[in-house]
Length: 483
Ligand SMILES: C[S@@+](CC[C@H](N)C(=O)[O-])C[C@H]1O[C@@H](n2cnc3c(N)ncnc32)[C@H](O)[C@@H]1O
Image (tube, rainbow, N blue to C red; front, top):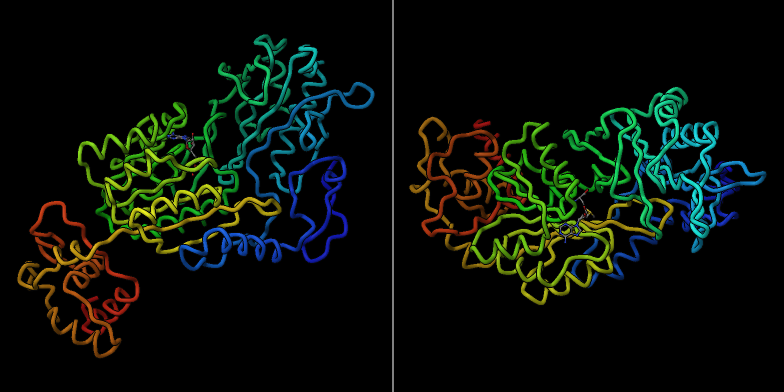
């Protein structure tokens, strides 16, 4: 019942669960390099028309990355209680004790719950006859704390000997920091029901991503590959080119992971999320991490952005990370009306993303970069980060400032703006504006005076110094011994 690799060759092989009907890893027979090549080709096919696709970011060790497992109960041979996954396209349970994708701690926690359930003679729920009690066990793992959250899903509320059962689970697997019972009497494939009882622990576990602590509850969305999530969020945040001043929207924000990771680099962040418990977790996460410049709203992202557009509110950067179905015309239309200079579209489904990009490109947006991230090795899923921009030349002209408007402080004026410009042109062949110089000086902690970056026009958008010019200006500042 364990996932045994057979015929391992350059990372490729077969898992013994495959033969029993598990369809979880359709790319497992391919070497990992080849999997990445195919995903890259797929992205180029789907998104290449919008611009070049950067090489996909894969994992160094593409095994045991999943931090979440759902194991369903059934009778096995000899009426022994087993748990595992449904065979592809059926509700027949394939018993699983180990999986090549799960964190090992999760398999151990599931084994502990299964063993305790056997000892307490809990009967698996039979969907057809509607008999029995226990349906699934859902476990989540924190890579940073090592804690596991386990949720036993039952068809009815009474769990005989619940306290003793919980103590036995803890004894069998001390990593289970919290155990909950979720009651789901409804037929159908939804795993969790609406009612929850904590059997022990806090009812949540904590994980750290990009230096921010996050609370994970049983039902809130949380990325399932923590190693690649940091890669994904870093790609998204660096695409946004935050300078510490921007007004940012994190749309479809889940427990606030992207917005809270970006908050230290932005002026302010507002997040919007439909799931009430996830939105509440986002608020708690901001408070627990002492992040004062982030706030969260529970609601529909499209209605929220539409409201902002109607009130004429401004945004500098919008992150959107919608579910697989992608965004909606109402959201995209509101995005066009708010018209932030940069939009970072994170997607777990490049097909719906392509549809939405097509809509935006037809409304005058440009795709500036496309980056794939392999969040799900051995499966066909691909995650992407796409940067869109909508800068117009009028806005560039509005903010171009003269040196005297920059209110330069004497202490910082080791080299004048003109000298820096001349130096950069001569040494790097690049023309740089006073605005760009002032932005880089500011980044280096040099005071550039009160009027830095201000336009004479209200609501003007400020173009940001491109990386190549930033590097050249930095070099000039070093040359003039200003940094
Ligand atoms: C792909 S997840 C992204 C979550 C988060 N950005 C992250 O990385 O963990 C999509 C999220 O959108 C939320 N969602 C779905 N429909 C929504 C809507 N109409 N408005 C706001 N949020 C929605 C889901 O509850 C889910 O948390």
